[in-house]
Amino acid sequence: MLLLLLVVAGCSRMPVPRLPHLGADDAPAAATPATTVDQTATPRDMLTAHLVNPRVDPATPNMTVGKLIEYADRYLACDCASTRFVRRWERTAHGYRLETNSGVVAPLEFVCRDTADDRECFLTEIDRGPQAATLEERFVPGSEFIRFLYDNGVRCPREEPCPE
Image (tube, rainbow, N blue to C red):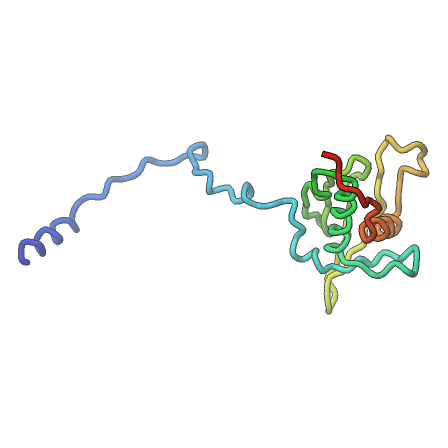
């Protein structure tokens, strides 16, 4: 037992080798947490944010940003799209910018503010891009886009399965 105690006491004085200095180029990959963030996931504070755009049709109910994204994904699924609507979310000074996988909808801008009860956002006008036939057709008010997704995301017109 005495011998074991002497060996353990002797080991505690052993010098610990020093590791070489890691420069910026040698930094481990785990030091960059941005690579693990899922940029297609709707930010938590946006899931329940209420859209406050005036409704074009009174029959269109109020909607949250999370529900808008759900309907957009469902609409794309009805068209047999193999991608999600969201490409990535980017935080801005006034809310969020949503890059989409849609070829006919430019990035969506949400201007948001926190209220005493919840968070509310306004979907700004959407640019359909230069492929639009006329300048009047190029820009869509956020309210019309919300109504379009509500009408098409709730009732999927496709009844047959997607072609393989």
